[in-house]
Amino acid sequence: MDLQAIEAAAEEIRALGASLVAISPQTAPNRRKSERENALSFPILSDHGNSVANEFGLRFRLPDDLIAVYKGFGNDLTVGNGEDSWTLPMPARYVIATDGVIAHAEVNPDYTRRPDPSELLPVLLRLRTHAAA
Image (cartoon, rainbow, N blue to C red; front, side, top):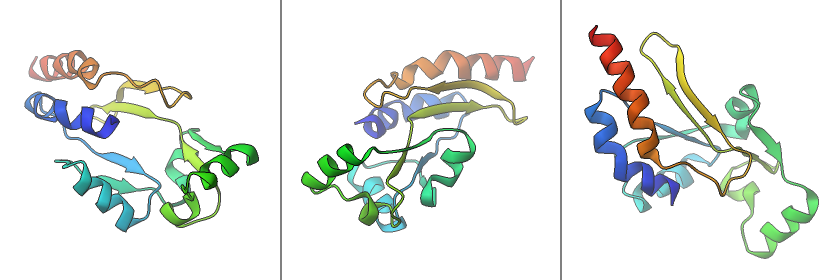
């Protein structure tokens, strides 16, 4: 649902001069399937083993009882992610300016709480206005 919400705002985001990418620990075939199923106009990059998420301090391991729940629902992360760490990234959004400075960062350990992508538009507008000045 989050990818679809970002896709719904993608045109406005690009109109402000930004590019979009998502990052996922999924294997390449599963990543491509997500791109197709969600009709995304932006790529999903692979982060095998959540190594990038780990570098940003966003990687966490599922507790054993939750792993059992995932398996019970047929959601085996070892298959989807192609490795057996049972780790996931926390949802995070970054706006990175063309000079490499992080202009906006949002991380929430509660995966059910994701901001509306339109909340990024004022940040992008400020960056575009600042760059034009």
